[in-house]
Image: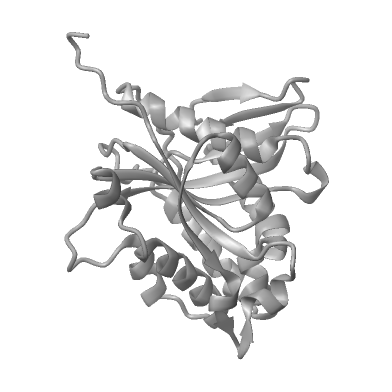
Length: 261
């Protein structure tokens, strides 16, 4: 049984936020299937659900991220249903000759649309070297964030990001808040000793961008969906007029206090 690690609740107490566990993993993946894969701008841009097997490939990406033990879920306590998730990934600075986590994953993608989505993330990330820009060697990346469509406008997305920030702050305080997740028979935590100094995300909709602004993230880069094509059609032509760009954002975590302090 995994440890329960709470991160707060909505004002009425109906939705609670906690670290992802073995018990909530399948529910978290179901949120991604019913929300992110269907309605997220980039998923629409690459026609993710038009290609059988592509979404399952991205579920594997979620599982790889989950092994870092730093993902967060939203639970409706009246039904015990997972209604939101932030799949978070620890990124560690590597030599310039080494491929990043996403680049290695992209190399092994078998489906055109899932590879296009991962390559989109790689493209945006590559435009600003966050490690050099902030002089850090470890980042907690909010990789995929999603809420069930029926649970919109309840600040769940905001609270998932707030919970992710607080989790990062606890790691900075040397608190062991990582939760081991059993993936393919192993519950070994990856990047177990890495301590993030920064939280980053690619906000792909106006909704997530507004949350980032409310929580005082820095804006590093704005990338128009006009720049990207899939199957001969610009992302913007599929996504529509409401969400016209993706925005790379980041926020520093608190400095590590010395033990003397």
